[in-house]
Image (tube, rainbow, N blue to C red):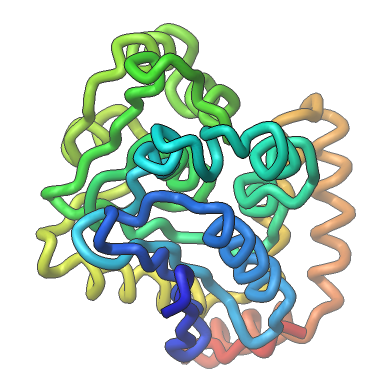
Length: 264
């Protein structure tokens, strides 16, 4: 069976890491398939929201340490070939995740550790089961957050809190993750999928061109000064004013009805 499953539910595409017997530990095949699935979802006009989750009891346990201990896979003896090729190219899942324009929700159904934590941090919204944990245990394994964590954590938490979480390497409960601003909401494990679906469908019902521009502007704003960013916003706004979606948004407001956006 495929290590990455793809399912469309209306305008929401669910991408599921599928090695439940090893808590969805990452392999080279999984990285390749996930990267392709993310790019395909971003290119598909019918997809308005992406959900990333894991099969079974975990979101993703990180790199497959048993493979590494056996000298196999990413982090093992193969690091000099497959691993280095992965980390030195632009075809990196977490880079793709950061680059794509579709909103991505992480449905964190269980532990998100190591690479799995970096994947979760790369999503735009994180919803967690009450039984899930974030595991920033890099320092306990002799490595650093290798796929985005060193970039995301200071921006999400501030310098001191990022140092605390990364350097202590202690698990964070779902409630702690929300309190720190690393997750948006906690739901009972049995209700997580329904809660994620509610969020995804509500986002999907909004104007997709506006959602795309919001995400692009949020991303660009992290490296722009205020005046440059304001000019960038104005250019985006002028384009949106010419869209059919903007006309529909105005008409639906005047007519007191829900809008029906076409993404054009």
